[in-house]
Length: 313
Image 1 (cartoon, rainbow, N blue to C red):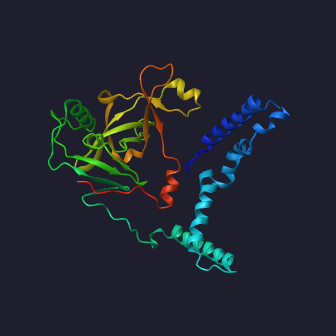
Image 2 (image 1 turned 30 degrees about the vertical axis):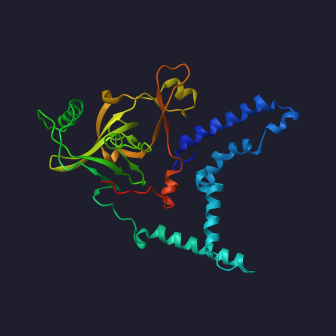
C-alpha cells in the first residue's frame, strides 16, 4: 500500500487483511462496550477505506497528508507578497505549478537534465551506470566464482576450460537513482559504511520469480560479440514459510547462503537496493535476514530527490 504501483490482486488482499484487523481489534479491545469505546480511534475506521480510496484517488502515498504538506511548504516558499492579496498570490503560484508540471509530463525533453555522469562511470544503457571503483587490470577469480562463470558460458554455448580474467567494478547506479554497491568494495573499506550491496533481482524472464541477493562485484564480458554487463551474486534462500504465512506475507526472512548459492545475472535484472537485517526469531535456529524495502521509492524518484553519487577512486 506504500508504493506508487500496486496490483489489483495485492489491493484486494490488503483490503481483506485490513478489514480483518479492524474487526479483530474491536472484538479484542472494544468488545462492543460503551465504557471501552475510547479504544476505537479514528485511524481504525480510516484503514477500512484505504483500498476503496486507492481505486478512486490512487495509492495513498500519492495523496497522503505528507505529500500535501510538502506541496504547501513548497508553494509558501514561492510567495513574495505578504499583504491582503496573499491568497490570490498562492492560487496563482499553484496554477502556475500545475501548468509547468503538465507541460513537463507531455514533453519530457523540454527541460534539459542537469544530471552529469560521475567521472570514470560507464553508461550501459536502460538507465544503468557502472561506477568506480574499478580494477586497473584484469584478475583471475577464486575457484567457486570461476565455476559459476564457466557454467554461464556453457549455457551460452561457449565451452572453455578456464574462466577468463575479469576487471571488477564496485558500484552500479540504478534507474531509480539508488546506488548498489558490492561486497568487493564494502569489505575493503576501513570504515564500515551503510550496507548497500543487497538487491532485489527479477528473474521473471528466466524462471518467473523475484529474489533477494548479495552482490559480490560487477564486470563486463563479451558473449558472441555482444558486450554484457554482469553481476556475480549470492542468492538468499526462499523466505521462511511459517514466518511468511503467519505474518500475512509481511515478514520476508531468509538464510544467507554465501558461496553455496552463487549465480551470474545481467545487471538489468537488478530492480532496487534493499536491506537484509539479521535477527534471531524465537523458536527458529540460527540467524535469519529479513527484508526491508524503501517505501515510496517511485515517488521519491518523481520528486527529483535521488541518492547522491560520489566519485570514488
